[in-house]
Image 1 (tube, helix red, strand yellow):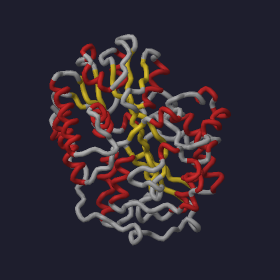
Image 2 (cartoon, rainbow, N blue to C red; image 1 turned 90 degrees about the vertical axis):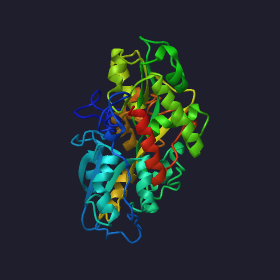
Image 3 (cartoon, rainbow, N blue to C red; image 1 turned 45 degrees about the vertical axis):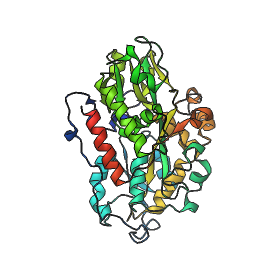
Amino acid sequence: MSSVVGSGRGAVTRRRLLQTGGGLAVAGIGAGALKLPFFDAPGAQQDPASCVAGDVSSSDSSLIISNWTGYIDPRKKEKGTFQQFEDSRQITVSYTDDVNDNAEFYAKVRNQLGACEPIDRDLIVLTDWMAARMISLGWIQPLDKAKVPNLHANLIAPLRGRQWDADLSYHAPWQSGLTGIAYNAAQVGEVRSFDELLHRADLKGRVTLLSEMRDTMAFVLKVQGADPDDFTPEEWENAIEELRKVVSDGQIRSFVGNDYLNDLAAGNVVACEAWSGDVIQATFENPDIKWVVPEEGLALWSDNMLVPNLATHQANAEAWIDYYYEPEVAAKLAAWVNYICPVDGARQAMEKVDASLVDNPLIFPDEQVLAETFDFMPLDDRQSQEYEREWANVTGG
């Protein structure tokens, strides 16, 4: 995507910032280097109905947002989406790109939210699994359905019915993406499946997988014949043992959170697990880098807008959500960030914004591709801690 640090296309993308520590080499880093457990907030459960502030939106036309770095078109651009929101809604937005990592942001706000104290934000943007976690803790306010009609009318079908918030009571996807495979066609023949990444002999030692547990283990579960959306503890154990064997055999060069495409372009890696928006960026500069829909399917994820407890400008936040679900606005945003646009109708609107992007399958995947996508089932605290610990033991060598 074009959500970059600096300007336009080609710098550091939002998903490359997902892991604060960069890549995890298979050898040379121990599990103790990871911050585990991710969730340690006993007694932090709240009731959003009682942990609520008075909404001053009618008398204070301001809004405070925390989002990922570079995840919006230029805010100072006169006809950009940000300026047009402020002008059309007469709301002044304090926009901070201080979300660099889900777990890091959680650590920043957990003490306040767990104690029903304000975090001085009206809207935050977090990835599915963390959004599910915060909703389950009662840290997120329900949205007024009447104030976000565009969300309910225009959200694309594949993003509806999430297990953790099926009726969109608490979340609204900001942008979405796919996890699949990329390979360097100048270095190796076509790679068709995640199973090949794990087992194909000519790829041995020249493969990277993502250091985000849910991204990678969803595919390993798939290879094992399990459903990432609904798997048993036994299926998890089979999958993590399969990954342990693959790592031990030397198939995987490293587990990475960013810059994996630099190694792919240089030939140090010939195939890798990849995020769709990153591949768009890479193909601008190197046509040998190819995106593959794995035979196992694609993982579909979203970064989601959430109103935290004690937000004081909820109506203004809902105005922001509803505005970005207007197809014309969504198309402008998608033309910049290059990830999957979650808004139905934006593809048609893109004709007037940038016709070259209308048929880009990584921004507007067809229905058949989206029908084959899957998610990672929500985990409770115990599962999160146990599975992350086992994951760290494998990926940390």
